[in-house]
Image (cartoon, rainbow, N blue to C red; front, side):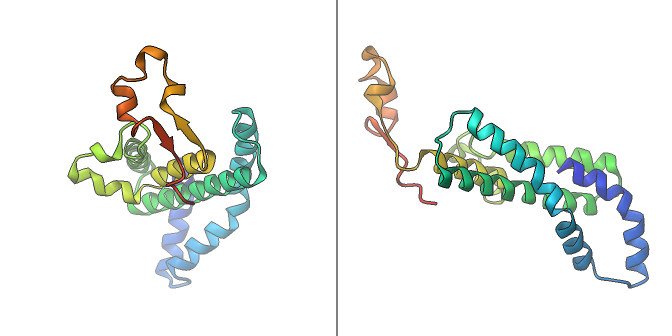
Length: 181
């Protein structure tokens, strides 16, 4: 997201000049920029996920790996689109960096990783539906844990089996089958 803002700073003057001359529409610029930078934008995340997936000990199956790879690539493309939108909305690189940092931090905070989405205040809860970080986090969890069942008794020590921990985890069993991809 931040690299897109820095890249757009150099393109802004040329874009404004060409747009004022009526050479092309803004949608043509967006599509051409997005498509021309697609191989570069997708190469580094592909290398990163390929290394990280196998280093982190996730399940070694082709379908889960490629599903995780596609999910992360889509997340990168959505971050690029948000960065381009922020770069177009503000007029200086400094403001763009501040706005993008604030937007990204908010998206990470409401994604459900740090705070449960059910406990968000009502004036913020709708933001979770427009956060690509939330959708990629839920997709990553679903891809890796689909079909697995965890019993509370196996997860906690003997003296905690009948405690509030087990009651809080839905009567001693987690099941990730309810999340369908």
